[in-house]
Length: 206
Length: 206
DNA sequence: TCGATCATGTTTGCACTGTAAACATCGCGA
DNA sequence: TCGCGATGTTTACAGTGCAAACATGATCGA
Image (cartoon, rainbow over all chains, first blue to last red; front, side):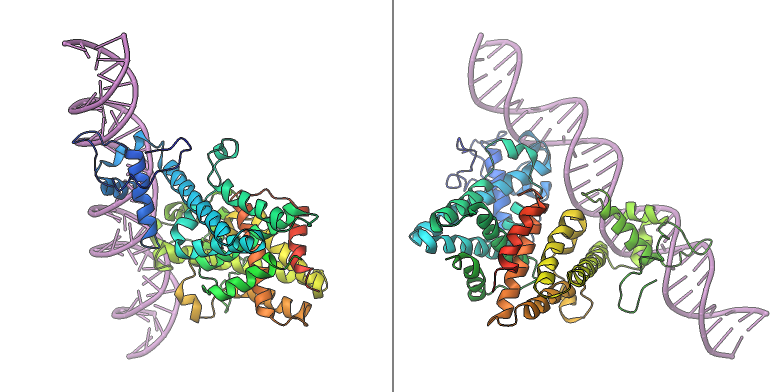
């Protein structure tokens, strides 16, 4: 149930709390725990991710989780990574649906903010967490996808730009800041307004 | 030691762990606790703000803090508020030093990001925390200062703009996103680059 | 000046948390 | 078939936020 790229195959994991084998051994606990965690993150904006609670969800003793994660932080890292992967998928989808180009670029930005609004707990967990060093070298970071999409989007949508990476960072910062401010209730969610703000950067280069 | 506007007078509060009276009663525990908390936040990027540790810093039993804060969350709220107040002060200072106008506006933005870089724990605590409802109505929020400065800066620096609040939100989102991405080590701190990115918005309206 | 009262501090204890250590069970390869 | 490694369980421990009962000392009315 874990693909070679480390992502969790969510289709075969309605197995939350459903041991595949009859008894002692679970089958694929790691995937089940991650699925249960994501479920908790999805419903209920303030997610309580206690080890014991998570273990109970899956139907297993608390310390069993230590066979698959060195500690709680590692578990949260895995959840964060999964969240980033979902975000990346949404962005790719938005890009395609908008037909690429400048419109697609704008769609990517809006998808970013919308994701934060619709799945606040996942977004917060995914980003509000110091990037572990191990991800810097290893290619396991699901978050790279998100930024790379932005970077590619910039250079494809605005090929005439002289400083594409600065522009990409600008775009990323803008949507990330918007997302965070909405998450922490500094500003209210208002899709129209978000589009206005994002368009100021994402559409205003030419 | 608490001014009428609820801010903590930090000059008279080298009294961390220094009871003013001789014995049982402390003098001004609330202020001392906040000072101790800010100290912990300043040194050491990952602040451990346990109630017991904080109480030990101040030289008082753990449960004494409950005479001044209903619970830990309230204590953290107070620390967050103090952090926002400091940020506001830095921004005001930057604005003045740059002589106001468009340059001052840009300086405000850079000060925002620099604060996040130099005092990461304070910045994170101040923002990564759902805004409590009580602050929405009451005027006790130190964070209003920060945003209001931006808003005022926008309208003063760019009076010809037709949608000043959208521009202000744009500016805020940009610097906030930059700050957060740096905090969570998604990107590295690089002052020159930050200036470039910020200038794209803060200097590029005319 | 005395004494009650109330804000402020302490002690004790409880439920809960992450996690280490020792033990149980299962699956697979020799 | 046996045994060993992977996986799961039980038990225990230190640390946490917090409630309750108690101690102290400052303040204010008689």
